[in-house]
Image (cartoon, rainbow, N blue to C red; front, top):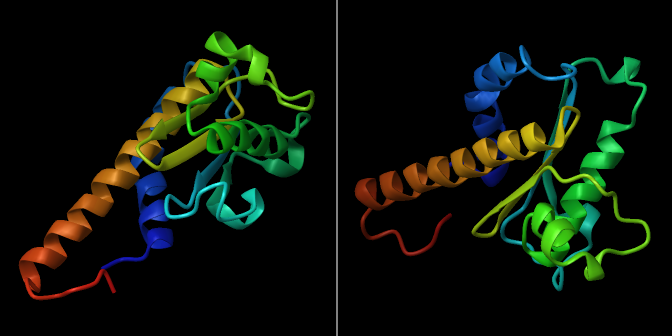
Length: 157
């Protein structure tokens, strides 16, 4: 079975053509993406240690805005609260911390948390959702294939 890291990279690769198509209508073509390890929870790990994979699209060396920092902040909000940060910002702003960023752009799908920053926040959230669902379904494929190919396998690895 592929590792979580391999699946995360595969999920981003799978949706990249859609992201590039979306870039035709966004305010810029820059993006930082963070995928959290769905096996690690805030009570098990520090945020930095729970980042499974992160990458940038575009040219980070020319950014005038630190999209990587913004993506980390958005993703930390979602990971800590186990809900997309749009929910915190629009429905439960009393739980915002003083240093929380006030832009949304994350998506939580089961235990998968993905955050993006670089384009309009609604598109950041859309891209995060594509990646989160792709990650889960690619994992489902690996899981079902392993069960079919080796029906007596007791553990994942």
